[in-house]
Length: 119
Image 1 (cartoon, rainbow, N blue to C red):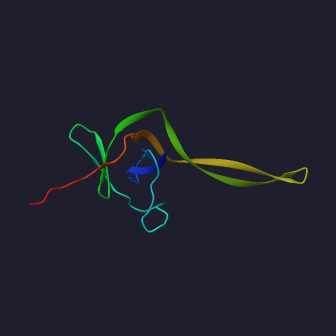
Image 2: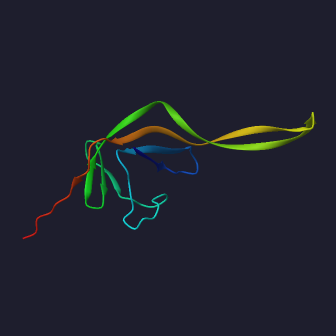
Image 3: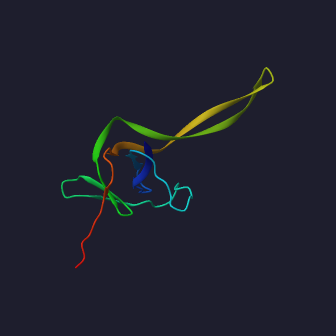
């Protein structure tokens, strides 16, 4: 199973919201490059809010699942303290919430080929 994070709200005034996209199987690049940080397809929603993922000439139908409770994406940073005890430096750990993940989109079926007939 492949899991990807997708930003769905990136407003600097509010907390960012991401979604997890789960695809069965593996995603491989035809050129052998890694796919991290690259666009792999198009995610669209039908009028009934059903997600559709189009990758190349393949189409996948999925569903949206609520994460209950939501997941938080945290960034850890260590703040050094000036106090030293027993020759060890104490450091405080600070966590910042980067985003919330309230939903995940799962694609459990195999991709179907998109075929067009030209006359």
